[in-house]
Length: 190
Image (tube, rainbow, N blue to C red; front, side, top):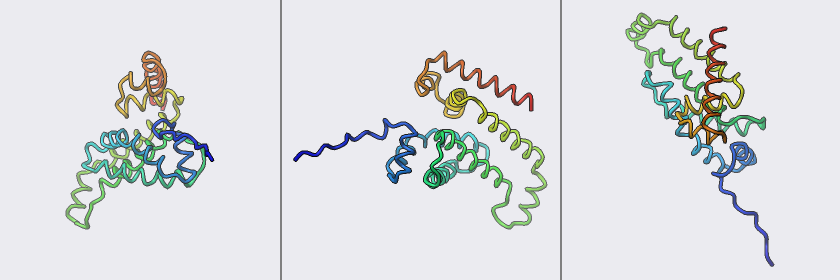
């Protein structure tokens, strides 16, 4: 008696949506592929975000993946996985930036010095600027946002960005120019 078996499709060939669907169905293997696919880029993003703080970007990314693991199974709503992962890392990095000014120990002398030398107004201003910029990036049309994130945050070349977006290099450059122009106009208007 012959049994027909379904062909095994390598996880590396699946789209993000397909990986999320399988993971939500109870299969843990797709999450390993999600991690493999995005870990390096998210780590680079976290390192750039935390570059002047001395904080450990690897900890931020690891915590983000833990949150993603739980979050993906907590809901079945559709999502843009890549953007969602970046948002989690960004939020965790902002948490680290917020906690940067807090003394690690209860050392009164250290705490007084930190308060005296900190420019709290500038810190709040910078955080607000980052929040506004991230909000404006989220409002960009999907393809513009994806092209900008791939180029500016992932550090992909125009050729790599074009390949990932299944388009041409000139079209990718156009998307990035329009995204930057839209961001500039939105920031100027604010």
